[in-house]
Image (cartoon, rainbow, N blue to C red):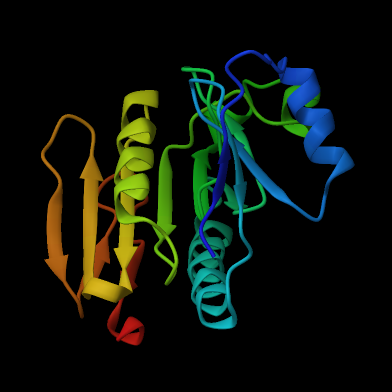
Length: 190
C-alpha cells in the first residue's frame, strides 16, 4: 500500500486546521508537503514496525545515557520552516534547541526541524519520495539523516553541506560529533 497524496490546490488548511484534522482522525497518519499536499501514510507491516521500534529504542537508550536531547517516534509531526509537516521514523533534537520552544509549541506540532532523523524504507515506500523527503529535511536545517533501505541493502547518509554517502549493508553507522558515541550496527537488516 502506497501513501495517498491529495492535491489541495484550492483548499488551504491553516496550521490549526491541519492539527485538528490529525486530532479528529487519530487512526490515520498525515503529513503535509510545503506545497500543501496532504499525504495519508499507510500503516507499516510487522517487519518494518519492528525495525523502526529497534531504531527508536537504540536512539532512546543512548539519549537516556547522555541526557543531551530528546528522542521522537514516527508519530511526531514536525512543522518545518518551509511550511511542511513531516514525521521521520525516528528523530532527535538537542536539549538546548527543544527548550527554546514554548510549552504550547511542544504540545502540538513543534515548529522545529530535528537535528537528526532516520527514515526506514518499508517494502511499499517509493524511494524517490524518500529521497525528496531527506533533501527537504536537509534544507530545513537537519544536520544528519540516515535513510535505511533494506530492499537494496544500502543506507544513505545525509550531512549538511555534503554529498550523500551510500554504504552497502551490513555496516556500522556513527553519528560523528552530533550524537557523541552513538552508533548503529545494521547487520540485523539483512
